[in-house]
Length: 286
Image (tube, helix red, strand yellow):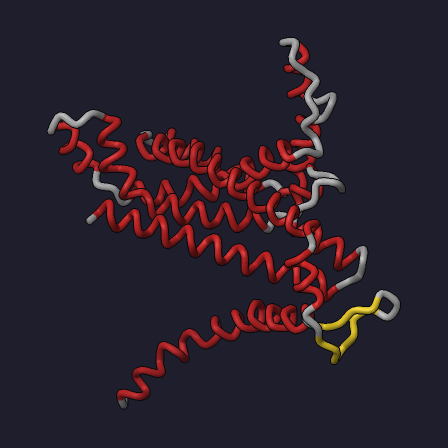
């Protein structure tokens, strides 16, 4: 076998996967990009063969879209922070448990993934509604009722519930690679548990926190079902606006432009965050 043939073997083996990746992602993405530049007439619809930058100009200059993008990204950022604050300690506790409790708690963490997001959204709507259990408890202590349904509070709470497993599992996987002897050595050298956690454990689980944060942020920023069902018609996020443009206004080019802008903004935020955390990780480990 020649050297050229040997180098071609990996490409032949990965060929089916690359073809599927192109057919299911790159080709639709390219067609969406072309669509975003097409003209649009409210009377006749999409103007095939007529190209314009008006849709992108509208997205970047209209304060209405600025407010929607700002709401989407601050909600996604808040959901990510809450998932880190809840999921990382939860993963640490799970990693220190003995069997069978470790398996049982992992099952509890993963169990919500077996239920449809729509079903969970309706469940939260009953919990957070004016006559729900949460407001019922607040009434008993003299606080409520508090309007939570169709507000940003409901969207954040439901997104944290839905996306928390995507934070716990990467952090737990990173903790499985951590040698317990390193922690024991630090403790034997009179390091306090808090210092051991901050100086030994945290730097080594940063890759898991980074992976989980990127997954949670991306899914939260592009979420549609939770904002649509718990945010109502007035609380718009980017995904719900794209839905409205495609199915209500029938302005497909504008919907495509908004969707691609969200994709580009998501990539910019995630790459910047990755560079920041990765730099801190390399500095911490020398």
